[in-house]
Image (cartoon, rainbow, N blue to C red; front, side):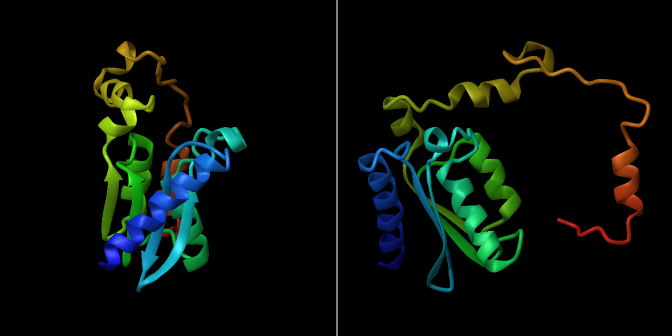
Length: 156
């Protein structure tokens, strides 16, 4: 029953976001030890930030609050199945579980279709709709070499 309560909270964030005209119909929360430690709502149009998706916002807030860059002992509840960008952020944050209400197909029916991104990821760089071209710079490996030798690096 507790999981349903958390999911209702995420869905209500999404609904409130739409009714208050702040952004898209998406909401997310991060829960740790029975407490909400991060909340997020889609604020892409409100902030002119294409990365301001609900899941990313919730992850950012939770990490700030907990003082960590990984959410190992946390759960993420989101009103909709995460898009490819949010999926990447989730894997970097490493929560123990993700729960979602609506599917990506539900989102596509109201104009949020991420299928083209999944398709683009699978294409060779030269066939993508946005060109990706590697540039051959002499010192391109410099940052990696410095990281490899740094005694201050934090593995993640």
